[in-house]
Image 1 (cartoon, rainbow, N blue to C red):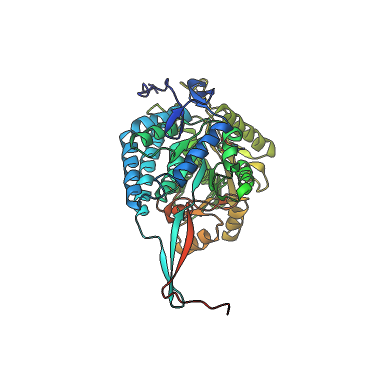
Image 2: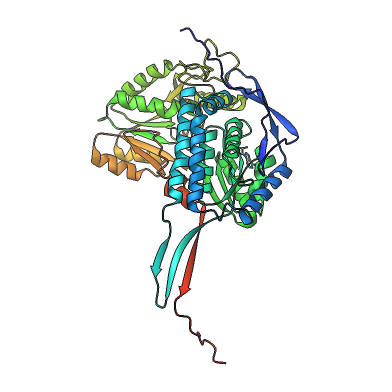
Length: 500
Ligand code: ADP
């Protein structure tokens, strides 16, 4: 097939700086970002040190303690969030192109992310002005009202797989509630978030309310997690780093939310249409080249349809058009970095050594326009055993493992045999069984006869080692508030506890 690369309309050869206290600043060192589609240098980005993290925290502290943000009315904050959403929409094509050039994902996926990010700001703009308190009848003559207040300065550390979306999921509820933020995007994919900072500046967000620091996790991320001037830390990323963050947050017992890894099961019963199940399975694992925390990376399939299912899935997986994200024909892009590419290929070797059967893929993807890029062919392993590393560990790439079950009890046991509990799905036409199995799956995000649909209105987060707390929905706003009770004595008279 003739492949013509769209000429990028976005200029990346420009200054990419941190955003601290309302100013775009250099950090003193420079990182070369690599285009994952060809392995070549894409552009240079300024990076900072612990000192810059400290400055950003001080700016956020000042903006919270003295600044106007906390005391703005909810409707003013909502108006600002609506403006941000409009700005994202106006610049969506540029932001999506940046996301694709920087992280590798197909442009059609990046466009979807931008629309979703704008919608996230709109959702929290709407929620900002909705009643969130209660009044409680307590013994007269007093009344108690329960109100929610912002937590304060929020550190927000985000990963490379959905940079703009993760920024929206964290900034929108934090700002809606009246907090101030210090965000650190991944050192691999900061571009869309820096561009977002420029848009925040354009719409007139007061200085210090959102600060963006750039650099490696241990250099600028850890100081945020450790700082006693930060009141909350929100993190999305690996379990390993999540544990470091939780530990670091103990300095001042800051509030912590963590959205971590997964090894999410798709349970397919034999009464369900095999072709439709295969279609969802492909979507579940190969979307964003499997670099999705909720990827359907384990398929637990009824033995009655197992052979037909794996044959059909492998046939279709082989046909997936792998290529540069900017190519209009591309269905699956490269992995984000050389490190991730190597890691995924290593896992494939582990799977082979463990004795799983490789049905397709298992190598670098070859083809026109793929030279130098971090492409891995869509890979399927069957004949797996539950104790295999490829079944238990998160690979974070286009690699899926198939597990076979003979009855519902075994299906549930296999689905739950995991340290993780982020997502899970069941495919069956039997509504009673669907209800039984979906309730038995120990995970925070579950689907019946579907996969991956994510709504700003609904909670997102995991059981077990998939994290702490929830993002999105009203839960996401709650996670950025403290709860205060205010008891008002309606008839003050002396309490006379002490006689003299
Ligand atoms: P991955 O290994 O897939 O890159 P991480 O969980 O390490 O995932 O990265 C997610 C985010 O956490 C990134 O922004 C990264 O820079 C940051 N990070 C990594 N290590 C640390 C650390 N020790 N302290 C704080 N942040 C970190």
